[in-house]
Amino acid sequence: MRKLALNDEILLKIEKPARYIGNEVNSVMKDLEKVDIRFAMCFPDVYEIGMSHLGIQILYDMFNRREDVWCERVYSPWLDLDKVMREEKIPLFALESQDPIRDFDFLGITLQYEMCYTNILQVLDLSQIPLKACDRTEAHPIVIGGGPCAYNPEPLAEFFDLFYIGEGETVYGQLLDLYKENKKNGGSRENYLEKAAQVEGIYIPAFYDAHYHEDGTLASFTPNHENVPAAVRKQMVSDVTSTYYPEAPVVPFIKVTQDRCVLEIQRGCIRGCRFCQAGMLYRPTRERDVDVLKKYACQMLRNTGHEEISLSSLSSSDYRRLKELVTYLIDEFQGKGINISLPSLRIDAFSLDVMGKVQDIRKSSLTFAPEAGSQRLRDVINKGLTEEDILSGAGQAFEGGWNKVKLYFMLGLPTETEEDRKAIPKLADQIARRYYEIPKDQRNGKCQITTSTSFFIPKPFTPFQWARMYTNEEYIARAATVKHAFNEQLNRKSLKYSWHDAEVTVLEGVLARGDRRVGKVIEEAYRMGCIYDAWSDVFDNEKWMKAFENAGIDLAFYNERERTADELFPWDFIDIGVTKQFLRSEWERAMKAEATPNCRQQCSGCGAGKYKGGVCIEGKN
Image (cartoon, one colour):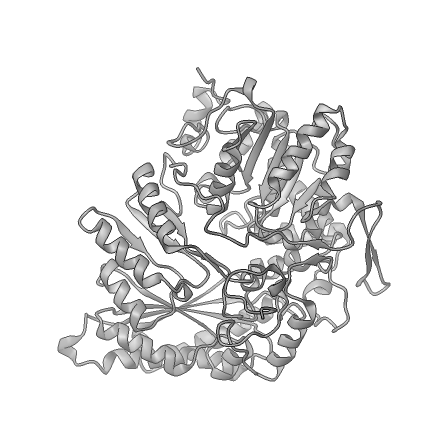
């Protein structure tokens, strides 16, 4: 009988105790006597968020297929339990066995969002593992970081033993085999890290030194250990059809953010939007075989009891067998109470036809993401969407019965002017006008156009990584311009407008593009009580600003300057395939508002062709 780490008295005091008891459908239990390696897989946010993440489900399934490995899960305890665990000195534990994380061989932490960085320190602290890698001993787990934020690992460098750069299905087996061998031979923690450093895609921060110019910019980043590569190459799965995929994902006891089966139909994106980090990191685009996807869909729904399946992709419309797949799902599950979710679609006639078959039009809203209000600025960001495309798509949607539209834009984009900002409400108003062109007796009630703006962040490995950001006050002023312009529109009763938190944006920008020195700020903020910074009701900007001051780090240095063409970035030692030269050429094209064709139209020689596979034609004869 498994003994829970928390007693009944504690469970009755805290919100949603089901977050911590484990034992869900499809969770994996193993005999400790028959495994050689214990791996704790962590999502550093609350259970409901972490359980919605496909990457964790894939790795959990992959690890547990090995008889010699038991992979368990751990999430950040919510504020109520965090307080109790500190007071009672209860170590953080895994859901499956309820054993302390400190007793595991590995603690793998997925880095999905910069605003979860203090939660990483919470997880280490509650696990009674020293925050800094240099303070850990043979008694502590190897702490691994992976995921999209690992492509600039430097702000977190001090807190991790190693980072896995790339897609997890590739060299984890090699890492685990090396650990077993090292353990069998009586090797030390240092011996293992030295061996791991030889595995392609593995970055050991302690084996590299960063030096800075007097002006604060990075002067050099070099190995300090023999046989360590100067560049770390990302790992990528060429054949996504044949790789691991969970046919029986873990089913949560409580409602989570994405309470459905997720079917990943492809990886990567052909579009080349210049603000989009994922579009560059996951090149080239790789599609899954449609027959395999059909099989996965049936098995996952059968094994979980979920009533919804979501087709996941950066741009689902670009999956070439989408019509066949959706038609199959509609026919297969018709009358069985299964909903089909289609995010990331470009709004065209086919997409609207499909959505009309799988959605309740009267209840659902359509989402457009023009990102910029003017055509000039859409060309700057290489959105590949004209005003005619937007209005035509909206018109077809309205004629199909929809009357609710959500529009997403960004403020603070490179070269943005006041005219560009005022073009946002103008475009929203034009869409509303398009609705009222339909004869009154054919309309589906009143029209509702909801517009949201977030503030642009120039992420690493994008053509905009050279761009500057702005202060909180400047961002708010830009949003105020848009708000005022909305009030002047003819159809303002049909229009709603909201904007993202500027304080969070400013901080996220520093964490996304920071160097090793930013680690001091993260630790100081955590010591001051900052956790769950991604949650607006918990986020405390004053504490963060005080942490910058206490650490002696100038926030403006990281955000409020445009980078020079020859500046060395903290992430330049990582090879993602896409070259810095290509990204710079895209930056220069952006400054001239020149669009670049997508990967199916024309190869632009980005460098991702070295990985082969997918739609990438670069380097092929």
